[in-house]
Length: 68
Image (cartoon, rainbow, N blue to C red; front, top):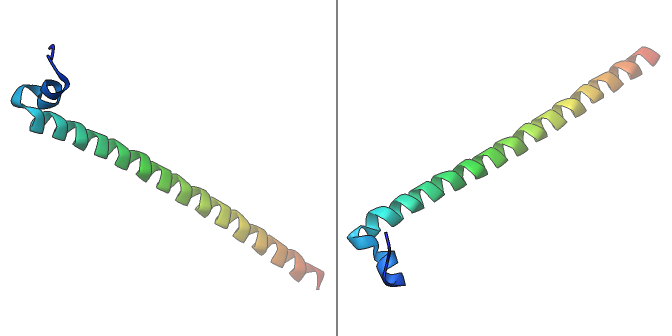
């Protein structure tokens, strides 16, 4: 489809509300997926780091208990 001007492109032949809202919804959904994945990844890494630190504290406490 060829447009004669930029405003005709934005108008999309009278279907601008449908076309641009579908682009907006799609972009919003993709953005939400990226942010959600990033936050989930960050939480997972923090949980792993906390678990490793806890296991190390338990191991250190057991070693201290064995030396007394």
